[in-house]
Image (spheres, rainbow, N blue to C red):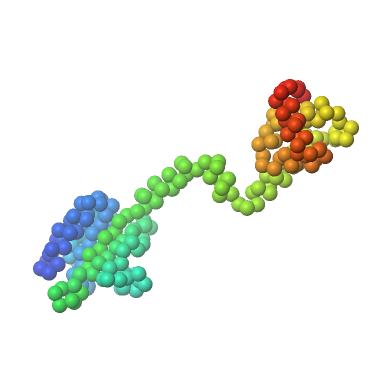
Length: 218
């Protein structure tokens, strides 16, 4: 923090700058500008390590970002984004200061380094990622791919068996094997099995009940 030759009209904002910097910690930089001396407008800095701003430097984005923004209103612009020279993300806010004659004499700027927060958010999102989340966020064609693969596996399980000539016990054995291998955990598998075995869905459910009751061995 550094103070130097501050216009008396801007002096009250020094304590405001100190309060903001103290409240939000080392990642929060606060800059007080004296716009009557634009070539060296920075007259006070709190936590200058955030962006490297120093007393005696000129203002930088007051015109290019703040005044040109469509969201600038009532002499302030809040929560806009800038980058440091080394690529860190900064959440910034700027308010202009007027004197008793309504002339703009200064500006108070807040620069908050949010790069660490972004890293933490990425970590939290990765940590919270579950199979259910992945399924919800999967591409539309993912289900078609699963369906096609399941269909192929069922065909392989049935193999070259002559379903028409296969007796009830043999069909139940196929159903039991598929159940043990998790086929029926796949959405739509009942319909696929019924079609490939040329039986009704009701019959598939009946065979599954039979497997539970009698525990038929393959």
